[in-house]
Length: 164
Image (cartoon, rainbow, N blue to C red; front, top):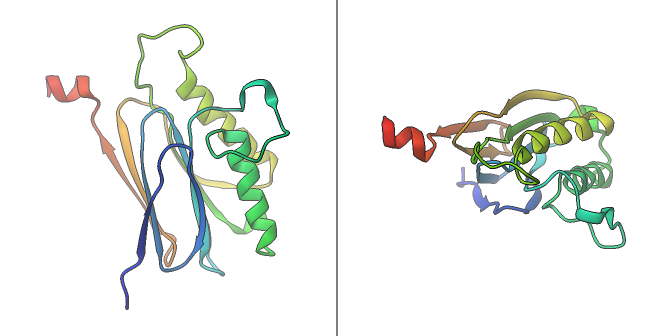
């Protein structure tokens, strides 16, 4: 059996593909959503940075940097493949508090990222089967589309590594 194609997602990326593909990303305060259809062996991953597009400008194309656009991109792919949101195994990761001492408009973005993503998924009819959000440090996520397996590796924050 050939090795799966590895695709790395950078912040703001969105991918939807078929079995034989392995998607992976590295998260901090950003959030990744994984979708997998067990019957069709299709699915995807997004890596969004912010809950919504500034100014709510809908005249531009959908942009994977924002939770609302990323979930809309997933919903479009689900329809395009003739499937329904409730047929997918959905998992959500990330939203770590990387900068707990920052206040103001950037403070708390990690928690908002996770909460908005979960709310949007429910609104669009997706059922979340696993959720690992919040905390501190980074996470490496890998989704294998041939099997639907998702691997999570938690990485310590710089502060934790310095004192460990």
